[in-house]
Image (tube, rainbow over all chains, first blue to last red; front, side, top):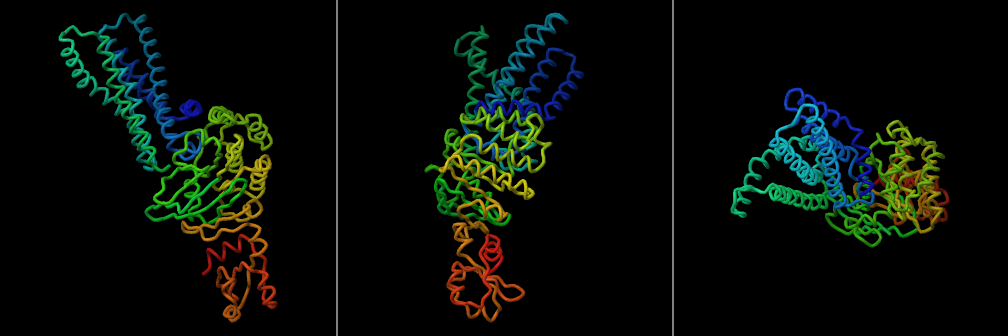
Length: 219
Length: 281
């Protein structure tokens, strides 16, 4: 897995797609006036952009050679998840640092907003890991065009998922926690653990499915 | 070391059904036209495709069930797939070092130097021959017991092809137990390199023979149409109609030399085998 991570580390800087996503992010920066959301969005999109670069590279150069190396379906899917995690966690840390800098320069950001940003990031990096495992096997043997559209849709599907997550799943989770604790005094810690557990389950299901599909596919 | 027993793979417009055995210490060539099924057979050996029927075994195990440790013993060079060409050779060294515990970095570096492959240039800037050499170096520098090479010399000039075959000979000389499965449509490359040859056509093995037997015992009879009718056909493997009459491939050159002293009989070669077996009746 270490070799694959090294390969992805080198490859992700060789693709223009990441640069393109950065440009899109910066364009959004101009449109939005809320600097906190902007910084957060840039980090998130960049992480997904770099990740997309690696997936599309594997698709373009062919999985066959990779799979002839000491790599099996499980190693491949898990590595992609680890890689997504490292990228998103890294960019999350960078965006938080940038937000801190923003607070120093522009004054404090409302707590509520900071909390939302934090939740958004948590959802994002867990979800991207799941998307990774699901997207990799289905791009095999699809042909370059179809594979490109599937891979290119990852950042946008991830955004959609995170919106659905915050609108429905976290609401339901809050209500469930209220019911279990028989109190409307929500514990932020408990809520956060609930979010993590839910998203981790999504990721695990995707990993299992990803490995299963990949084992069945021809390279 | 490799055993395919009626390995079958069905595509919309192509069906593969091959059987082959490659023992340890053997260099086996897979020869055939473009689209004959060479790459699909290579994929079967590497476990890259799932069988629709039959059995594939490499090191006594189904290659689809290989764990990364099993794959460390295999070196592969594929003409249609590889690492990103924007990477530099120095990047590839880092990747191989972490992929293969037995990667011989010193040997890889010295071979790159000998083959004039710059370490700090992107592979995309290399010539076709340099890329092919790099692919082979990546396959032979981690102490693999088995090399699986798909068209490693395709599209190269005769000098580059010879250099690649020399690299492979050096690799084989280090350990007599090492095996190679090499596919090509260039018969001259395989003729001087392989111990035995599988000829594949339309997804099926149509001939398997030791190279020495082909070169020593096989012969091509050039006969007129009238002489062709009189020939004893049980020793004729295949024939091809030509402008003067027939070219017939025989496995018993000596028999015809002894019994048909007036016939024109040429020594067998892989080219003649291919032309008559694949282009004849």
